Length: 126
Image 1 (cartoon, rainbow, N blue to C red):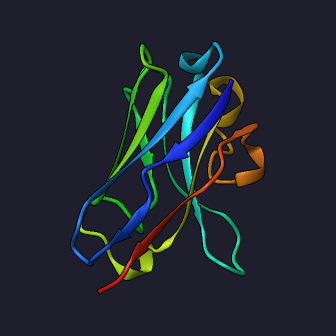
Image 2 (cartoon, one colour):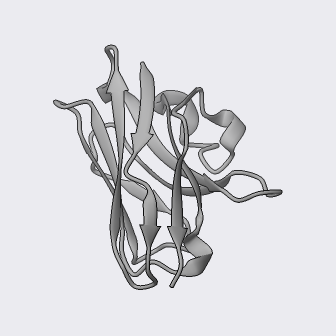
């Protein structure tokens, strides 16, 4: 499976934006979907993750109540819906995937994820 993130852009504080993560190849439905973000000089930060079936979401405290992850396994696509965006949400956002059998105990650590898409830049500024 290969991943490609898209949908980033420049938005104002309070706006919403939806990122997409499109998978090519087979097996997307077998992986946990994760989202991370990174700003210059900082480590990649966990944003959230969603189990294979989409039934359970894990969300970082910093975005809880504002960001939602979803997936359409039939389309091989995952999403990160971001609402009430703040300037501190400005970052390059990455989607990732990993086998559910191995990632659940270490999902908050970027290096535990085995498949990465390229990043998409989100800028929140007035």
